[in-house]
Image (cartoon, rainbow, N blue to C red; front, side, top):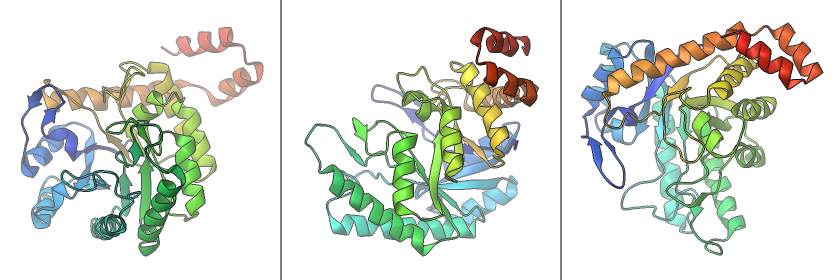
Length: 318
């Protein structure tokens, strides 16, 4: 399994929530310099449009620090516009705007040689019962994504699902909904970003979600973080869901996933570089523990389906 590890640039900048500011904003040069200081990090997931205000500077910084680009993160929610969704907006001009903007981001993904867009459509959703026409919203959503994806068939468009935030319920809240969405579109370059923490928050077993998506050839990309199952806290991998991570990495190896892992982990008031040092070392340790499991032995245990034997075997690996 690959150990290509990247950080989403947005998690190297300012840190704040509704109540307080933990860390001040940083400029692009500061964020990329910090990423280069983190051991085992070889790439960045760059955010559009924020990181492209000066594209030449971005390219120079990536070259200087010898960092690759794992994906372009397309932000479909913007302050001051698209307040009730962009892809699924009832306003035709807003849907047109987001399609053209997404096409521009896809062109940049080609230029950066990553040929991957990941987008988390957080503001496509609703807060109250009877607030939206679900069928119409999904129709608009499918139409806009299809139009952009068709324009760049050699660029993977990865949809990252999440149950809620900022909407009380997002339109694509779990792996099944997102897979159904991709299958309705029917384009080979439209697939899923599996965010481990979002899967946990949605009540999923991430390994099971990975298998389902891979069977449909829609497991395009992976984000790593952890949480307590109640909220998407973007914590250090393995801090809460240790065995779920072991199972996840075991299955990714079994599935032949050999692509990037990108981190969205929030350091809050902790030193950002130091926090990501633990993030990467934990990831590699979890991968190493997963690699200790013997596939033949696991096959035997799956046939028997006796938890007393499987749990005993798993703990013998520690």
